[in-house]
Structure formats: structure tokens, C-alpha cells
Length: 248
Image (cartoon, rainbow, N blue to C red; front, side):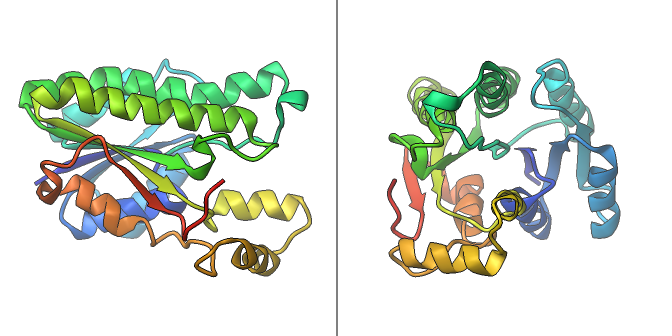
């Protein structure tokens, strides 16, 4: 039975990955800022034996090691690590303050880096493992008002390739999944604050995305399950775009 560790997992695509992994019979460790949310997910899915939740604020790495240690204590191993959690501040270079910059780098880059520090050691010992990065079409240069976010997503691509190159000898593979414009809870909340309804959001997206609609939370799941599975045993260092044809 595989064990999957998700950085995130309480909302959006991360939550759908969690549920799909349970359907496969995998154990899943996940994290979030609110214990009540994580515990409710475990209760609602009736999966106490297969799920481990760790309360974690990704602005601080103090609990990162404990998340890893708790997972190992509960399930003994980690077969796949999914770097899903991230924040997307709306700010150009011209109006990004230090607090915003620090927050997006802490959550999107620093937390994954230090979680990997621990997980890779475990994967080296077992001589196998799959790391799956959730990237973004902003990775190349990004929209004008997503400057710091774009930098973190490009850095994660470099990190994925670094792992693929240097850790393949340990049986570890690493791949980067570019997720396009998706109607996650966070995206809907952001647009609501801007005065745009979900219907208006989907209409706008459909006029921009070449394949005619924005992604839903289920579109990336088959690719993630492939990267977790042994079917991708020789797949590493790849970039897979699930964007409906959108490039930024």
C-alpha cells in the first residue's frame, strides 16, 4: 500500500487528490492551518485508518519536520510527495511590499524546500519515491500583477529538475505539472472580492482559454495518479501542461 504526503490537501485540487488516493487504497498525510477542517475531512470520509492530518502554517517551517515525522510514525514510509499548497498574491513588482513578498516565498518555495529536505532522506533509504510539483502557466514570466508568484513557480520548476537529475540514482523521480486556470475555492474567493461572480469568471475564462473552458478540480487528477503509480517508474524531469492550451 502506497503512502502519499500532500503539502496541502484540505481544499481545491489537493482535496480531490486526497479522495482519489483513498479510492486507490493509499494512505494519505495532509496538512492545513485549521485542525477543525482537517478533522472534519477525516470524519466525513470515514477514513481514520488511511488519513493523517497535521496542523501547519506554511509561513513558518517550525512544524515542517514534525509533519514529516508524524507521517513516518503513522505510516512508516512516504512513496509520493505532492507539492500542492500555494498562495497567489495580486501584486506587480511596483506594488509588492516586503510582507507580501516574504509570505509568497515562504509558502510557495521555502516550505516545500524544507519538507523535501526530510522526505528525500526517507526516499533515499527506501530507494524509491515520486515527487510531484504543482506548477503554473505563470512560471515563464507571469501576468503583470503576479510577479512574486511567477518567480516562485519558476523556482519550483528548477527544483523539480534538480531532484530529477541528482536523485534518479536513488530511484527517486520528480515531475512538474503545470495547472491552468482552475475554479478552486481560492480563485472563486479572489474573484468575488473583485466583484466577479463564478458564472462571470467561467465566462471570462472561456473566452481566453483556447479549449473553451477553465479547468475544474478533477482535470489534473489522472496525471497525478499516473505520477504516483509505478506506471511512471521511468518518467522523471518532465513538464506536463494541463492548461486547456493557455500560455501566459
